[in-house]
Length: 156
View 1 (tube, helix red, strand yellow):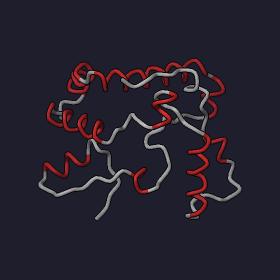
View 2 (cartoon, rainbow, N blue to C red; view 1 turned 135 degrees about the horizontal axis):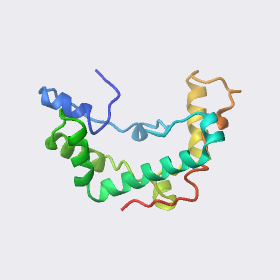
View 3 (tube, rainbow, N blue to C red; view 1 turned 90 degrees about the vertical axis):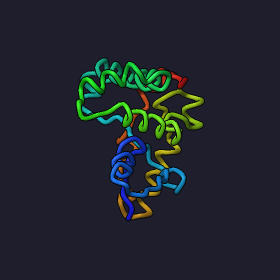
View 4 (cartoon, rainbow, N blue to C red; view 1 turned 120 degrees about the vertical axis):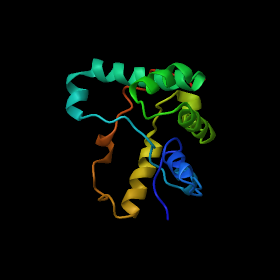
């Protein structure tokens, strides 16, 4: 059986139930899309750039800081979610580190949140080749790098 999962959550659940699991990164299998992009509406981008910009910056800085020291973030997670445990959080952190979740050539050069036209083109081409997207779809309107291009929030 194969399922889509995050290195930080579903693996923990399966292992807690004694299930043997292997984790494969999509990128290692040639699947080009970004793993967890931030999503909003074009209307929000057009009408409240300051809010979008602030959210993106805070999110990227939060990931950077979490990877430097997960303890403050973990304390907040435990407070907000009484079902979470320190062991699960430690497992998730280790899984994200092992998967090198915040590192890619683009991130090392341009910072967290970096996106490139080339990778979006590869995603578009993959989707078209699998009949998941019409070849004439306006795929360039689906993303913007406007909010990350000048940030340069570099990983620790």
